[in-house]
Length: 301
Ligand SMILES: Cc1cc2nc3c(=O)[nH]c(=O)nc-3n(C[C@H](O)[C@H](O)[C@H](O)COP(=O)(O)OP(=O)(O)OC[C@H]3O[C@@H](n4cnc5c(N)ncnc54)[C@H](O)[C@@H]3O)c2cc1C
Image (cartoon, rainbow, N blue to C red; front, side, top):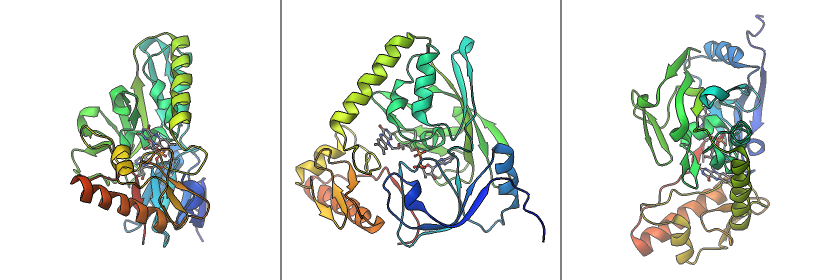
């Protein structure tokens, strides 16, 4: 039998509940943690064209349904974790598995301004590029100079931001025209204006304190479940429907922040999805507003 050409770790029937911040959901057929970028290229090249492939960062915006996910998940966190700082040009070149709070800290230490918002986003750079993650006035793509992507054949490509249609929590590769791309992010170069490192560190502390005060961070969650509709807040609308504290199975609409669904202990993915449907139905009925789900839901129901 041929030896595998890759050096990373391949596991069969991996529980995705261990890899998403909701701590709920089904298993994936196969899960691969590459040794590094070269190894990821070799792994992808070796996959049959029919094998579904999913990239996952820290799972902080993801739900895998209870009956699981067919195909292979590639975990980027820990695998794609190299970064390089260019202080002269106020740039950080980072691989997709680097955590956003780490980028915020590096930028502050290196005297760059404007990366502080990343401190509150508990995902990887790859996830932030996919979602155009943002908060407190900052957005990931506001700092992107270029990205590096990989496709199923393991080919790498450098792309400028102009290759993407970038919106609020939405990034679409223009050539493909869909959110579900088969070209994944493996690295990006970010640029920030020069700033005062001490002031940036202070701002990070303030942003984190605001989050602790307003978000139910003591229970497993996936951040905001719905995008905010134009000119309004999903949390306000859900609260106005009287749904704060409403539970289905082990999932609860947080009494602290109505756009958060928390896992109160033994939630199934189906409980969480049922609450998502309930909240969007209630808001549609009461206000005529169609809430859009920000969280990505994949797998078999
Ligand atoms: C407590 C809490 C607070 C949060 N606050 C915010 C906030 O303020 N603002 C905000 O925008 N979000 C917020 N989020 C949501 C989440 O952290 C972000 O969406 C984050 O960018 C997701 O990164 P991730 O690595 O966890 O992605 P994952 O959840 O692992 O994946 C999300 C999606 O991106 C895809 N993906 C992941 N990596 C790659 C890659 N390298 N290439 C291509 N596709 C990829 C996945 O397939 C999936 O579709 C919060 C979440 C939590 C739990």
